[in-house]
Length: 222
Image (cartoon, rainbow, N blue to C red; front, side):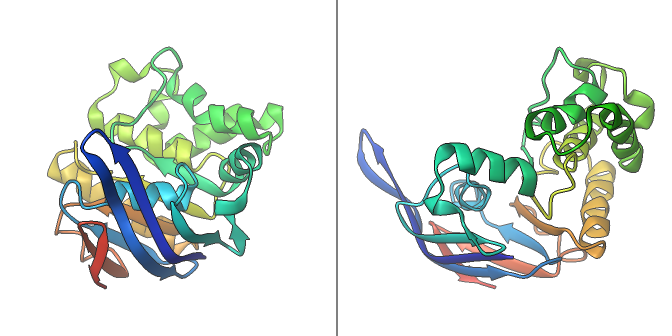
């Protein structure tokens, strides 16, 4: 599902060049639930961004389900990402003027993969799947952090992507809600979705299939 071959990412900073990733080689199988673990600044988020096509490698190759995404144009990459990747951001990134259901419908509107008349029904069904169906017509500001995270996960599933990526999905949640969110990701993987989460929390071992430890932009161990 995911193949990274000698992927490096270097940023230009006022202090000089900064190597965020260094010669990453990685393979993740379809339906696998993988946790990328490391401290803040270790390169976790950069690695997720490479897999999602949000950022491009300075060198190396990124292939997702046989598509070499590092070589796609920006327009083709945006179309590919909308249909193949669901991304759960660390701070939810819900649009404040849209209801929960409207936030979930947004990816469907962009990609056009779901017929217009079916979008609202699908959005509500996804919100029910993540146990916030009753909040469908509420604005994000009226929801708790855990509810907003669930809406963000429902939005990531809007176009039924084969790959879901999550950046610190439990970092802003209480322990009970965090456990429920991780169990939800586990269920998604059990149903065939490839799930990759970046986290600094050690307590994910019970739900993931594989743990990848990263430090200073390099994989320490798997």
